[in-house]
Amino acid sequence: MALFSKPITVHNTCYEIGHCWSPYCVQASVDVSKIVFQEAFKLYGSLYLLAAILRKKGKSYYLKKLLPETLQSSFFLTVNGTLFLSFFCLWRRGLLAVYLTNLALETAYRMAKFRGLIKPVVHGEVLLFSIASAVYFYLFRRESSLPQSTISGLQYIVGSAECPQSATSPGRSSNNNEEPERSRSRTGLALLDKMVARLEASPRHRMCQHRGGCVLYVLKGCYRLFGMGYLIQAGVKLLSSLTRLHKQPRLLFDALFNKDNFRLGAFLGSFSGLFRLVNCVLRWVRNRDSSFHGLLSGFVAGWSMLWYKSSTIALYTATKMAEMLYFKGIDAGYLPYIKCADVLIYSVSTAVAFHAAVLEPHTLRPAYWKFLIRVTHEKFRHMNRRLLDVFGVQSSLMFPDDWPNYDPRFTNITPPS
Image (tube, rainbow, N blue to C red; front, side, top):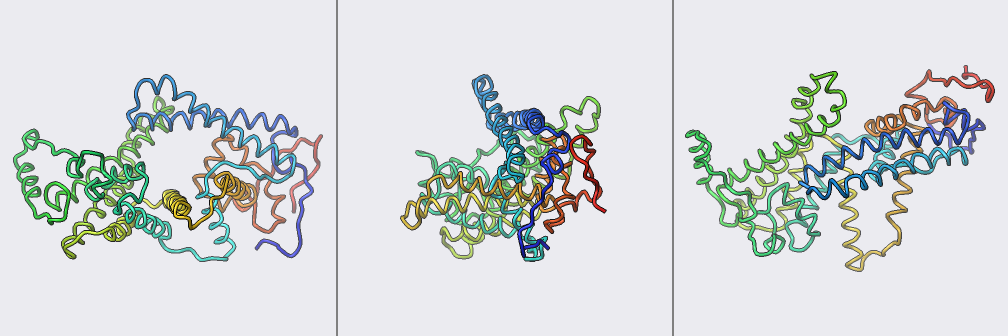
C-alpha cells in the first residue's frame, strides 16, 4: 500500500535511478534519441505502408507523402522520449510521455486494482465496448447524427442497408450501396448455386432495405468481415516478421495460420452478422423500423468481442464516443468549449502513463510495456526501481533482483539488504 501520511523523497542521483547505463545526462539523452528514432522509423514506416496498401493509395502518396509522414511521427516519438529523460534529470520526476488517453485510463484502473481499491469486472472491456457500440449505432440509425466520415466507417463494417437514406451517397440508395452480387454461374458449382438461390429467395421483411433474403444478408456480413479481419491480422504478423523470414522460413506459416487471425476474423464477422441479425429480427417482431433498433443491435453485436478481447479497442471506442458526445453537447449549447482541451488531456494522460512506467510498471498494459522496452533497447527496463520501493507501490515487483553495474567513480551505493 502506498504511503500517504507524509511526503517521501528519494535523494539518489538521476544516474543511480534513471539512466543507469551512463553517468552523463547529455550522453544518456543522446543514446535514447538515437535508439528511439531508429525503432520509431521502423514502426511508423511499417504502419503507414500497411495503411497505404489497405487504403489503396496512389503512386503520388508513396513518392511524396509516405516518407515525410513517417519522419514526422518518428521525430515526434523521439522528442517525447528524449524530453522525458531530460526532465527526469532536471526534476528527478518524469512528466512527459507518449500515448493516448485510453492508456492512461487503463493504467489508472490497473493501479487502483493493484491497491485493492476496486474489484475487476468480469468481461469489463467487452461490456464497455458493447455500450459504446450501442450509442454509436443508435446515432448511426438517426439521420445526420454522426459525421460523414464516421458513417462511412460504420457502413463499411455493417453495410449501408441499416443507414438512413439521407446518410447514403447522393443519388444512390442503400440497396445500390450493398455489395454487388457475384454471378453464380461463374462458380461452376451447382450445389452452391442452389444454396445461394434459396437464400436469395428466403423471406425478407418489407421494411428491410437489403438485397436478397434476411438469412443471406446476415451470412454475407459474417463472411465478408471474417475474411477482412483474418487478412489484416495475418498481414500485420507477416510485416512484423519480414526481417527474420530469411533465417526462419517457418515464420511465414506461423503468420498466415496464427490463431489470432481467426480470432480477429471471428470478432469482426460475428459483429457484423449479429448487428444485421438483430435488426432483421426486430423488424419481423415489431413490424416497424426505428433508431432504437440500432441501440439494441449495437449492444448485442458488441459482445462479439468475446472472440478477441481487447481493452485497447474498447477504450479507444469509448473515448472517441465521449469526444463525439462532448462536441455534440457544445454544438447544442449544453457544454462549454475548452480551448486547448486536447493538449491538456494528452499531457495529463501521458504523465499518468510514464509515472506508472517508472514507479509501477506492473500496472501498465503489457503490450505498452513491451513497446517501451523495444524502442529503448531495454534501457527503460534497467532503471533502478529498487531505490523507488520506498514509495510503497512495489516498484521493483517485476525485477526484484535487478541492480545496475554502476561506475564506482560516480557512485558507491550498494544493493539494499
